[in-house]
Amino acid sequence: MKDHLHRIRAANVLRAHEGADRRQYQRFEDHGIMARIGDKLLEVHDVSVGGMRVGRIDAVIGAELGLTLFPREGRQLELSRAMTVRGEVVGHTGQWTRLRFVTVSYTLAKFLIQHLARRHGVEPYIFK
Image (cartoon, rainbow, N blue to C red; front, side, top):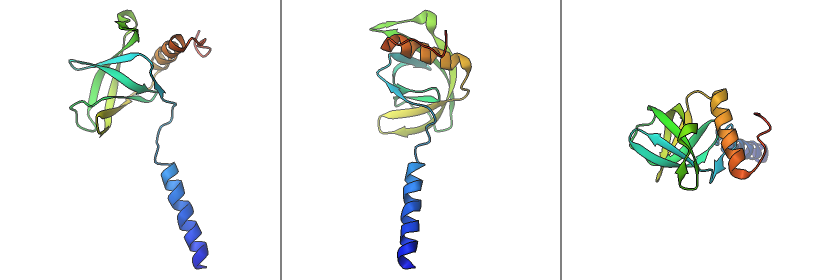
């Protein structure tokens, strides 16, 4: 009986760790997107349709911020393709700040998918 309880506890611990990552969408790194947050222009280190990670900013967890996302080709920002969204600060880890997009819209998904498709030379078959 004691061995059986030990196995159940071990299985519950494993399940708890599996559920610790709350991401719903695949993350992309090296994607060439910059974000203007307040008066700072920051490189987006990873992004998904649900949120992004940038260099640490001075904002409290739970703060909702206005963000402007700019696709980048080389050193050139594509200003005509900029997109404004709202982001909520969900955490700080070391030198990073994690934000989730307050509203995941069709327009935001299309912006990200089309940019990533151009960047990686893939046909954006979801949006034409």
